[in-house]
Image (cartoon, rainbow, N blue to C red; front, top):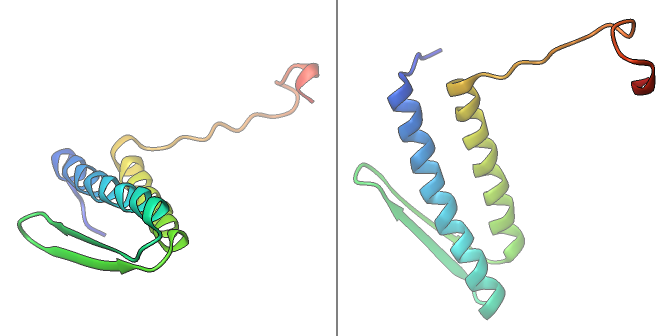
Length: 94
């Protein structure tokens, strides 16, 4: 398991958000034209070229990118779950 600095995690989140913006514009184009859309992203280190045939493929990719962004954001901020016993909760919540 790698340990990333806060700046590295924020950089990754920004990169994925740029990819997400491009996918959302592709989704808008495919909704308007109905054509096959090709998406290309270059960040200086790598290039991503993908061809999408339908809006459902783009939507699936958007959901996957959102889950990746959320995973990195959780590494940045953390996530906490608070469990309480039923005796502590008010009666109206039960």
